[in-house]
Length: 308
Image (cartoon, rainbow, N blue to C red):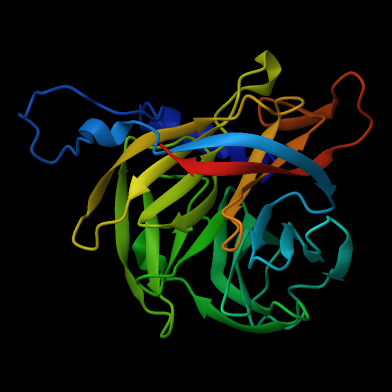
């Protein structure tokens, strides 16, 4: 998601609420606040990540894989690549058959032969007509949508993930990331929301893997070469709140920029993360390009992922 008007609105929101939204873990033993969630040893990363390769793609939003192909989203397009990074297919009219209008796709996931994407019309600092849009993974053709529940409090969708174990869909909110939102995969019914403690800033992508949700956050300032991060949340069906732990700082990128979606290859176990670089953004507004760039570059970084 581009750091444009959305970042301005999110910054104003954070300021007005006087909320500090820097993610981490609290090891304080003070038990006065019974609602506070503590993670203890869960604060530590549970995987190690060894950089393997990077390849350029066309889309700037998200990435998914079923182990046979890579799928990439742009704000208004979907792309399908082989495992060598060769473009095979694209859908540049992903909203054409929507019943409700949309102008933005975020991070995506692929499950059981279908691509799941968060669609919305983003206007005046928030998303309207948010929906879980579902596409055929073979053809990239649109199939159907599931509507979001406006009463949930969610005001934007930056990404979504399919929870393979519980058969649900989780959605992130870039504007106000205090909660992530869960829907039933079959019926589309809203299940509830999970309170993140503390809140990762500017959430971009989400992925479910082996009992945890992994969330990428565009929380590094590219103006001063700060790196973006990935956070981890344990999924507990009975919980209303969850402790957020720092899983990885992305120091391997060629130039700090904007992190986006993420995925794990179910066949190789490789970790994938989407990055954009080259475009300069100041106070939330595009301001040309950094020295040495005349366009924005979109890339997928591939890592070997091993348990600690």
